[in-house]
Length: 153
Image (cartoon, rainbow, N blue to C red):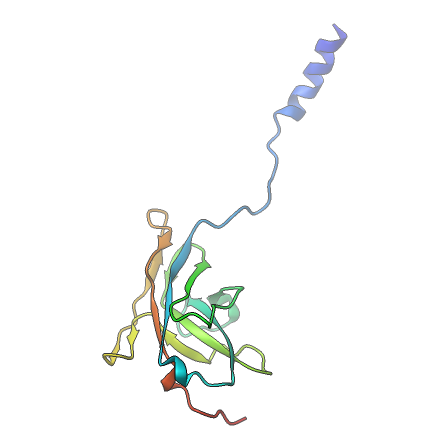
């Protein structure tokens, strides 16, 4: 009888739902960074990251989602993915960091929809929804020759 009484007392505890934290974000944007003219990469470029802009032009850092790792600059077509909440992103782009400087979100190297080979400019929004939480093949073409040889301070 005592065991049944203890079991009845423990029943509410055993049926509680445990909060496991924020969990993983299942929505994301994926693609490749396609570097052309690799011999023209300026020495002052330290790293490149991907940003997704929910409000354009962004009014604060809250309007941006940025990767927490840099893309591999030693490859001509490194892959990337950026975990991003369900939303419409008006611009997905690659930004660069100068050696010895902080990140400057104005250092746009290129963006999805810009084709420097055929001189086409098209801003293509990316929509992540419950039905389509992953955007695939959001490839960004980056032409190193479009950056100036030397950047003045």
